[in-house]
Length: 77
Image (cartoon, rainbow, N blue to C red; front, side, top):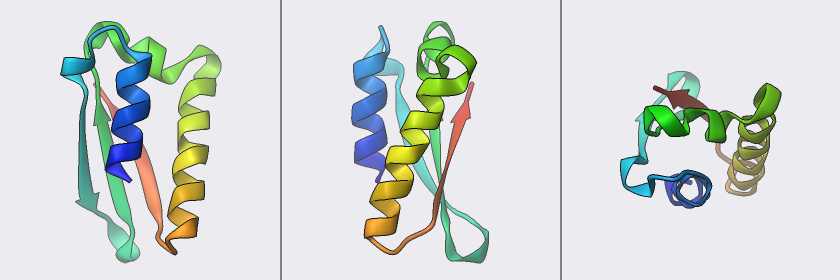
């Protein structure tokens, strides 16, 4: 899961070296995937009115459902 998010984020931003993805155990047996990008690239990952972030979350949900897991994406500064 983290590889998928990292691949997508690195291809969206101008500074791919600043992209970090970590997986944290969440409540109820799910996992939280934290995405950190450079301050200048935050808008590119979120997109207009959150459309890009919503699309990334949709892809993550589809991949997680296929593996019978529950995941949440958090985009951090």
